[in-house]
Length: 264
Image (cartoon, rainbow, N blue to C red; front, top):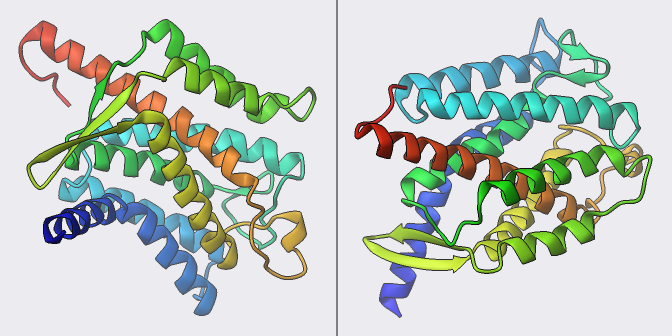
């Protein structure tokens, strides 16, 4: 029992260290909400804080240049989704800001980038290995369909549950192997999707409490984000994981073929 608790502590510590970027974002949201900063609107301060944090992560070696490329891609993917969702009225950013584009503050892309940052950090710290990973022709179209559904369900039927079932089918035999304290463990990939999605939903409640964004039913006063949003975050986590995993596997194949690591 003592060993089990020690391993749980070690696992939690590695998870916390992998969440440096998201925790800085939460701290920035809290500080700027409780302490009005001078000269610039709050959204602009948040953008500056995120940029400084990103620079510091790369400068300190907490993130590599390759990981920065992945995170930047997620920033752009997230901004595209934000622009569409805000336009459709799914949520809003009611405060003023010089860095807002079509009602979306540019700092919002960092919230998606922080998910990619967590995945890259956890992948490296826990020495993640994928077992039974399906072929790329099955993975890539699935990721595209999941991302596309965030847009198309406004004009067509919402197929998120069909996509979730497809995820279970495609990744039924896939396992995630990871290391804690020198011991290797395995868990079903689908279970890891659910756990990460649930924790992001909890984080979403914290973020909306500090005014990161606002859902229509929160315009009068803050209330708990509907539990149904877990399914949305679950699908977003799946897309994020598929992209990161695909890029990691491609990089590993390049290393295997050349016999030496590719320059970053």
